[in-house]
Length: 448
Image (cartoon, rainbow, N blue to C red):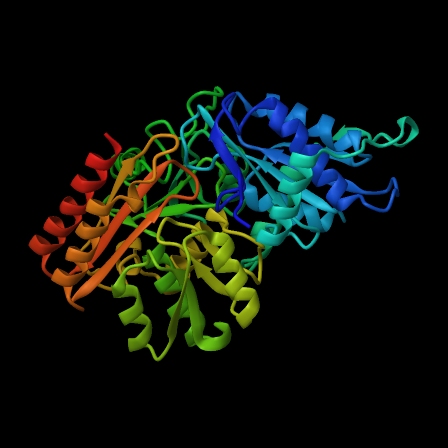
């Protein structure tokens, strides 16, 4: 059974357009409330966090109404990073955690993702059951069993303490100048406060959210702003987060960007040297660069690949007992400390490596030479299925034949946006461009 409105990371779309409407949020709240409160007991609770989007107020209220209508007690955290929701779900003994965010998407979008009582994102099976309950409707609680809602004021501080506890208490960040770009998103207070408390000299950007400027020319998908600030201020390093702070990009002192693959390579090699890398492997997705795979092999380690989506990375990590994984896009998952990607935590780990080795960011942010990789996106309309068009299939088959084992080709639909992603890797940059552009042209023709 295919999922109808859940994607690779919860439900996501343009606010006030299906499926991201207040009505759908109300139904989702009631459905997930019934899914977790199925014994009639009134002691069940759910924590709700959000980023800084204007529509977050609407979805927070709609979800609260749906959840309390089925007897769930709601604890409202306000703006906090996504990993804080995973953490507080477990520490507050909640049955469910909810994060209202569209991550790196523009402000007009929003999303809803769910965490189970163990702090990990829900399985495909759980989401399918919740979809069924949404479509069929649920019986509300009796009037005397309606749930309560209350605000929790210290969620951000609990998260900050947890992040800091992942590092040695004696590790001195004093004298390290850090630019922190919070994308005008969920970590706009938590990230600068954590860095300041650890002794760093902090230069803040992207910390003035107004509901409409999240990810707007800032954050991990627009690293130019952070890179320019690092160079202008003579900073030692830049940490660029996305809207819900579960992704990170690292900027070295010269303004050069290190993506998630490079950060994972650094952490994997350091952890392996100290015996901390469980299973001798790093878990990443099919999008990670071939250079990362070769780097891991050169260290006598393995790279295990999964489908795109940090939830699938985490599932494989839990299955295999691994403790480090992530995505090229900047999700870095360290299950010794968190249940999902945590951009701030990964940034602090990078800072720790700088302090402990005495090396500059530029010496740590390029562990391997990347194989030339090209990714292009093509937007498609509602009801369109360009990957099923014969001319597109022929273009893909031709590209695979031309690469002929000398590279990789990956064509997929985004799980969070109406995009076809066309990605290839090849040592021959001319062939790489030709292959990708040929497929993109056919997909565009099929969607026009």
